[in-house]
Image (tube, rainbow, N blue to C red; front, side, top):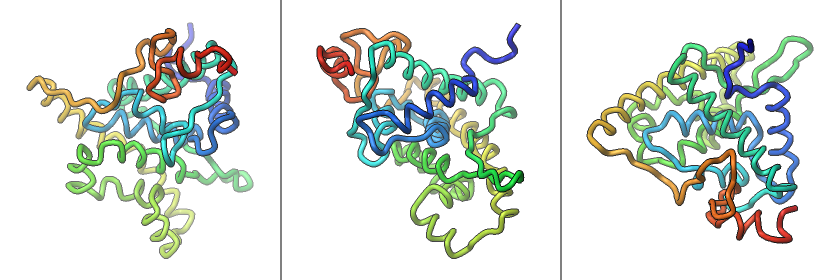
Length: 243
């Protein structure tokens, strides 16, 4: 019997998704797998439900949310969507059911056998998730800015300027990286309590356009997985457009 949770991607599947994000045609500013992981962590930790039709377009185009990827077939689109949603569900399940087991998906610099965590990409992804609901995040960004200090430091232009001046040592850098998991757990728990209170009051805020329904199977009348807001049959499912 496999001990791997059903939604957890294997290393091969993570590599497959990362290769698609980095190499696919049609997009130049897409997230890599670590940035996507940070992005999902923020989306799943925040106070508001962000619909896939809103958050997905930023996966493909971090800067403007406009470019869309080229899929080789409908099955290929479903495969990539399925991998993304499984990874998102894995983060959700871990934060809800076993938060002590949560760890961010960070890149590493081999450093001659003494790896150094690379956290910039992950932090940029997390801050992108925050930016989709700036007002909702105010209780943390304004009320508890110290919680986000490391993520802001490595994931924003003002933080990079400060890093350039501070020039933390490798030990300091490792210590900051090691604290990211606890930061995610703390913020998730904070907003989870808030969301429960709002749900009890019958108020569940949602941000986004028409949702992507049943992401493992894209119907021709469903919103396109690329996040364009168009129906699949009028976008990547249109005749002569399934590349």
